[in-house]
Amino acid sequence: MPAASPDGGGPSARVTGAAADWLGQVRFGPDGLVPVVVSSLASGDVLMLAYASAAALERTVRTGQAWFWSRSRDGLWEKGATSGNRMRVAELVLDCDGDAVLYRVEPSGPACHTGEETCFHRPALRPAAGAPRESGRPPSEIPRESGPPPDVLAELGRVLAERRRQPEPGSYVAGLYAAGLDAVLRKVSEEATEVVLAAKDADAETLVAEVADLWFHSLVALAWFGREPSEVLAELGRRRGRRRAGDS
Image (tube, rainbow, N blue to C red; front, top):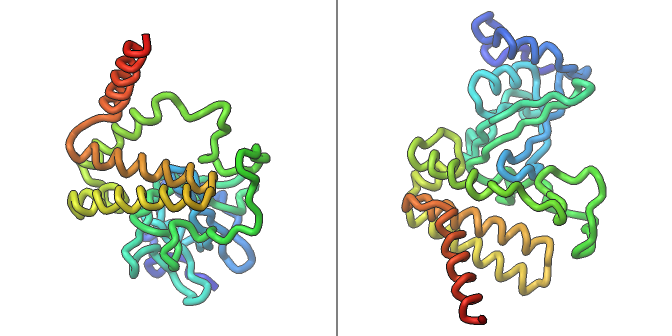
């Protein structure tokens, strides 16, 4: 049976106030555990499924890092304590029945022990290229007809600039910046290669995802030099305007 508290059950180990009220609504199973779905705050992609005891949820609330209950080791487990691939928990959400929890996180590295970004990387079925998605898709999959919010690049630019100025522990982007410019540029190069490979494989679904990764890491590099996405858009607009003038 999972431990009741991460620090031996003493009163100081437990959270109070609104957080305690929230934890009181969680419906744990007979084994004292509740399933936890972990998703990326940035993309909405599902990263992993784990389980948490009351103690693990308490420690997650108190530290802002992802804690779980390891059924194989029969003990509390901080994600990334060994690998370094920690997860900063930006939001905890309880489902409608109170028997499942969602962690929305900023991962500092791959979620899967295999090195994959997500533990869910072995699909049995894929939609045909260009086919519409059915309901139940992850929130990151925005219908093509609606498109992303018009200010998504500006918002990304603000977040990246903030991470550059004030690094936040556990942040993937802050970790990249701390590793230096060469680390940032290596990621840009890696993502560019992934775009080429996806295109060569004619995998349209993967191509969209890899282009998004390339754009994201290119924006990380841009923020390194204190520049904003709007400057790139302005340059594209300038080139487009010049082309139209030439056509006329």
